[in-house]
Length: 314
Ligand code: HMG
Ligand code: MG
Image 1 (cartoon, rainbow, N blue to C red):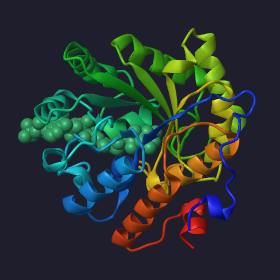
Image 2 (cartoon, rainbow, N blue to C red):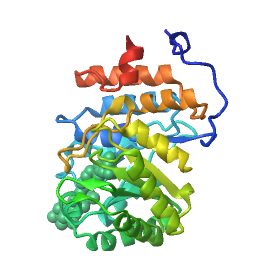
Image 3 (spheres, protein in one colour):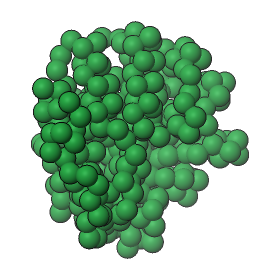
Image 4 (cartoon, protein in one colour):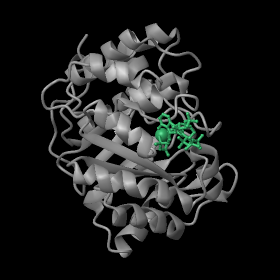
């Protein structure tokens, strides 16, 4: 049964105070699958990527070129990209932490990469085996070379709102980390609520802190994990502040292997449902996306946590 038959209205005028269009940055194949207890076969990953692209998503984060011992779930990055049949008009960014990762990514022919910084010392050590300041020394040659090669470089900032080891994180600290990434040459910043503790007020406060520092909201993306059920409310707050790039994960897959309390990302289907209702364009066929997530849930052997997937999959 199509979603229209289930009561989602035909396209509405865009609600006041919201952007006309949002770019969904799909992270399921990377943020989702990096956190699975088992390694998903490369054939399954390839079909998942194809189904996501066919649903209308135009940015599908495919994998990571990190140290395979750290994230064995994504150790097949070369094979995956070699066998991927990219769909025209779709970008397939990959995560790259260091020079070695960039060499691997360039050899695989990627055109979009993302470095991933931490806003806190503890998480920098746990996730990157690096200090808060040292992480920039690791990223500097990566961003410089990638930009010289004509690549787009996203800079993630993790633990933007709270950190399980250090507690609440000061927005000023996040802005300092984000600013350093922009100064290195990153073309976009994705503000990560790695453990899902943000609420709408803290999202507004952080976005306002970036704006007060002179950062154009157009370069900011938001990346919410849904641990406390706040991801959609947080997204709406960010849209009202002018953010137009939203990260989400098909079926609500996700987490971070180096942040135990991280659960799944905002589910892409939940995001699409909300955007439809608000008249914000997104370009995704919700039925096709739900099919992809139901299929993936079957491969993983457990139901999707997404409310919209559960409602529509019947
Ligand atoms: P390290 O162990 O300190 O590595 O890891 P090293 O620099 O000391 O090198 C040791 C060996 O590893 C060397 O080999 C290197 O060549 C090799 P040897 O000389 O001993 O034979 N090596 C590599 N091999 C392949 N690819 C590489 C690579 N790098 C080194 N890229 C490192 C440091 C940064 C590599 C490690 O900590 C790492 O890979 N971390 C990644 C952890 C990760 O992927 N976390 C999840 C993604 S972040 C996230 O999920 C948050 C996000 O979603 C946003 C949010 O939610 O907030 C983005
Ligand atoms: Mg994440």
